Length: 334
Ligand SMILES: [Zn+2]
Image (cartoon, rainbow, N blue to C red; front, side, top):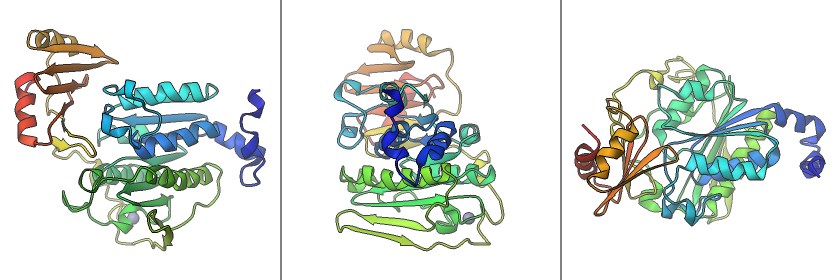
């Protein structure tokens, strides 16, 4: 039965038996496990990419189910990367799949992308994309940028020697400058369409073929797909000057509102005092506390906290940054 698993794609001249072997030997790293990530992961795993890694910092919220394949109502509150790993193992037990629950930042991004044949962007913010661009250009790893919001999406394959994301977007946008799923919403047919284009480019890279050059722009509502020519900018900070500023230690963004969720994330500057179990014991005296899948959940009168082992905390039920900070210092620390 198993030898038939890939028969339909081996028939394709674009892949064939040799291509299938290449897929089986490759490692793909997916950054983010939301709408784009869950669709891209499903494509990669079903196609038989030998090692698939997904990194995501978030837990599943009921508002994710509208567009994030792989998740069900029973998964609400659990870490996305772990649930995806579990589901995907049932899809294909012949390959290796790792779900990593972590915040991708300048301290760890190079470790995550190293050894990848291709990196797929499935994040929801430009900060992380600039970071991934720096890490991939520096380490000469091909990656595919993808974004989806409202009814439109963009995809661009970035390979060593070609234009990078910063050739197209030279500066990090100001907070609030770009639309997000939070502000304008998203139609649920968009992520799979964008992930299809993105993963096809990733397959081409793994197979050693030239990816499509330029920036895909998809307007799903108007039914239009364009590919805009992109040139390398010799003055580009990243691929021209090779100044990888996003990989340098910067003042961390401490408090951020999370895209598509009524929640705020806080990354403390100091690590947790003691471990999660100590914190659970303290919080148990004040409300309902439990540790599931290695993360601490705490509930008390409308306040819901998810605390990760490094102290990173998601405060659900608010987008008010000041209120979130108060709740954080009240229950976790300062
Ligand atoms: Zn560049």
